[in-house]
Image (cartoon, rainbow, N blue to C red; front, side, top):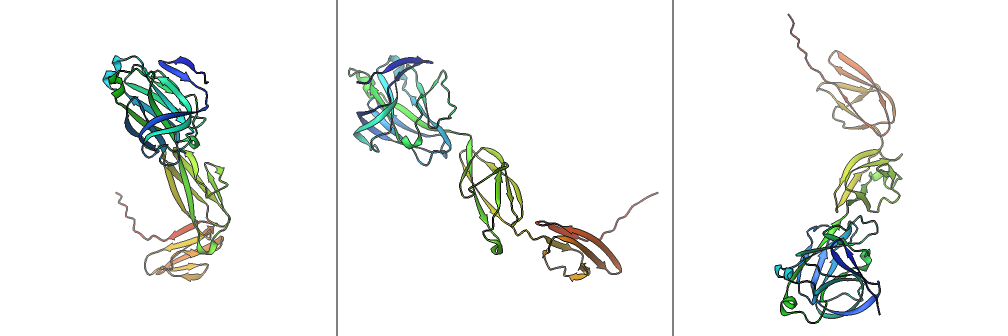
Length: 327
């Protein structure tokens, strides 16, 4: 026979029971599915002999717990005790609606206090940061996502409840407790002639060993760097939102330096004495020192360009007229 320990915690009458599987029968009223995309959660009506299944619609990686809010009708304030709430995990099978026999581990049990709203938080990770206060109690047991679904049960403490208590309807609302995290998922597009060459990815100056793996990050701004001998180095910022995954696509660029010439019509352009067309577009060159020369009629100007790997240079000739007025 299991022995229970009863304690008083910040206004809640709490019963702590051993984490041992037990058999029980319950009337399952329905399912509540939770996800980070719906922080408002879901609700269901329960009477004193019914239960609700609570499960995750998707994975729980952005969650740190589940909050259960039991709202009682006004008539409940006229009573002192008589109803208990329990939470079970590690159920023997997926519950279906209707009366069902189950086995599970009771992770929480207490008599309802004389309040309209009762708040219970169940952590689902070890470092959850949840704290019991005057209005909310945090379960001492961490229920890992692998132990879901869980079952919330309302039950009479004794068999001689009056008719009003037996028919009284409560509202159970289950909400996800979000962490301050999101995720980034990287994908890359390669130049056709340089497909599959090695490169290094850093996020916040930390080298990412598996670039195909989704990475969990704190919400806010982060820094991405791509360093390579085979592609142009990339540096950019990105924002991670709480509870969301950012898909970030990076176009890797050929590191060959490019020269872009711009000049008025009728301008002759020479690069190291070789004529260049104004409409030739970006010109790939090797790193080194180059001489650019522009001819417009009898006017000529020459500039030296030191070209470095992985950079693009815009070489522009601007012809204008300056007018100054003086006394």
